Amino acid sequence: GKFGGSSVYWGFTSSTGGSYQENALAMTQIPSSVKSFAQASVSGGEFAPEVEASNGDTVTLRNALTVENDLMSAQANTQVEQPQVSIELPPELVYEQDSLSIDGTPVAAEDLSIIDSKIIVDLANYLVLEKEMVLTLDTKLQDAIPETRLSLEFEYLENATLLQKSNELHVQIAKPKEKTLTVFYRDATNNQELAASKQLTGKIGDSYKELPISIEGFVFKNDSGNTEGVFAEDSQDIHFYYRPGVL
Image (cartoon, rainbow, N blue to C red):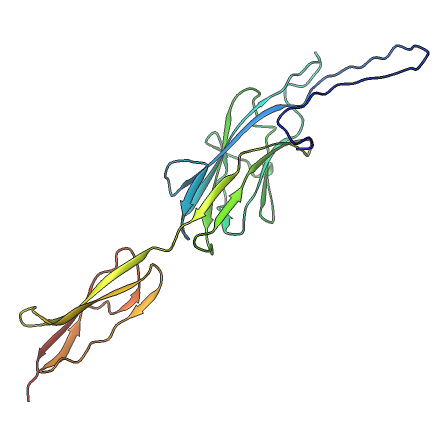
């Protein structure tokens, strides 16, 4: 992050000018080498770095993390110090409580911190060097503007210092789906159409209301019971039934 690349040359130098002096340096640990790959899944679908979702969908976020660290001292600990992974959620993705797990095991409450929309997981009790671990959490998409794109990424830290970001993860907000209903006007005695039917189209979630029309020689009798409501995937066509008019 500081040098704008994925690798750097690094080391130490010293100078005593015209005199001489012995300089000694002991290194017990070098910065970890980290691989971090992020994907998402919508309502149990396939995982991918870019997904499409609609309001109300469950979006599962996944981070595959592998940490390698050369512990050079014989006295060195078997784990890196204060390893953490974090992710900042956009306002449209709301974390579902108790859904965070590592390799299928729920993360203990004491290892999880949530500050505003940022989720921080302490990995000291879970991280095994040179072994891939998979962190997953569920979020609910809400109040998202259709056809916008959300971007987010996981961050890996040691001793509160950022070492590696994952690839950018993108959630594309889907265009609102539409539903078309057909409105029929029928004779209640023989189910024959008395007037031309019409199409009623609206976005899923929008409300609608239909009223019977006047048909010469007939009187409105009853309807199919769904003349008012909200467009949904399973919405049914609307039927108005009439009987012949009698003086």
